[in-house]
Length: 189
Image (cartoon, rainbow, N blue to C red):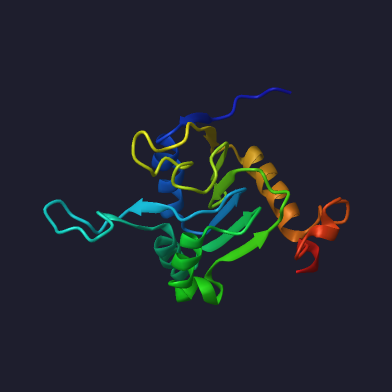
């Protein structure tokens, strides 16, 4: 039976303003699924007008913010399809709290969904990968053309989390025709 649900359509920079803002304010959990995983820079809230900016011009790695979230006990999960970019890996390696288990990451070559669920209260579904160009963090003229939706609808969030968790736990591995080529099937973790 059709029912009204709260949705907001996001385009381009709105991804950063709504999705990234929710991620940075997470209190319990952040689950991310993306095909491509790259370093994302976020605005540094500690930079004040008139204060000298560092070499990154008022930005810092999202992984620095993730390390702070992990320190506060926020569960962080990233499900991705391929090896993260070198800049992502360098930034990750510079965060001892993440390296020692503050974030869980799993690889499945069949992951193509792009979703972010924050605190089981907001879900993003759309075209944007976890990249600066995808999430609108890049400057005007450098970001991708993206569209997606965010919702606070509990039924949709439950369904998104259920699908994510099935993949995360490896429940889809048994029937996967790529299993023999997979370096580390999720059902073997």
